[in-house]
Amino acid sequence: MYNYDPRNNGPFGGGSNRGRGNQFGSRYQYQTLAYGAQSSSVQAGSLISKVMGMLAFSFIFAALGSFVGFTLSIGSGTSLLIMLAGFVVLMVLHAVIQRTPLNLILLYGFTFIEGLALAPLLQLYIGTGNGNLLGQAFVLTALVSLSLGIYSWTTKRDFTRIGDYLFFGVIFLLIAGLVGLLFHSTIFALLISVVGVAIFSGYVLFYVQRAKYMADTLPNAVGLTVSLFITVLNLFLYILEILTIFSGGRGRR
Image (cartoon, rainbow, N blue to C red; front, side):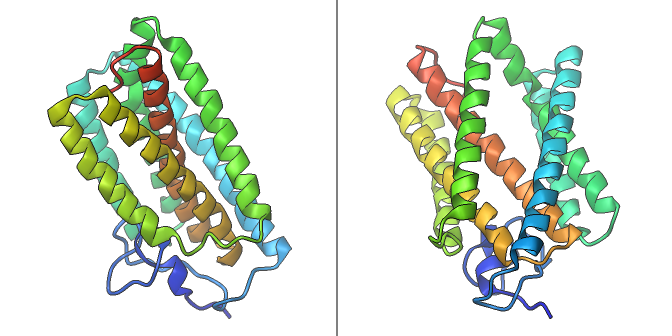
């Protein structure tokens, strides 16, 4: 029988709930194994296999969204509205995450919308002759994510307790990002990006290892997939920012 491990149900999956929702404000509680127990290799492998497959499809839908947005020449103002729509879809997804196939439809709809919102950024880099930076950021993100994922899955070190620290790290990034808009400092932007890479690298470790303690259910797989999608996407954007700064550009902000 499954119960709920408090390590997996706090904000961004860390710590106890303390009356709060999970990482996206949803009251859905992920099914986990008994506290301190670890799933069998077969069950854990089955869940992570589902997640990796769904994550691959998520990025395919994101790429399709970016292609559509690029073709339609979506502007930055429209992109902000699209991002808002994506946030609404994300909230709805976590409210109905236990309903199949609606959860899958919303998952891929969300990733498509996120790709659509990225189109102006892609247009900017390609239009200014910096498309190579997009390729470099993509390769580096893939290598970092894959390496961290493998390490997290195979190591005996426990990363399941770092969720709260990562959550407060995200709050720091949000505040620092607002401050950065006022000062327009390249050094400050670089510092934020380095911290961002560190935080979202931590999330890769956290989410991949978290799968070992979760029941092999579709809602769990959908929840982990959307969490990893957002994590890897942010990792890509911060790596792209660092590459842009070192190439002499002003960054994506």
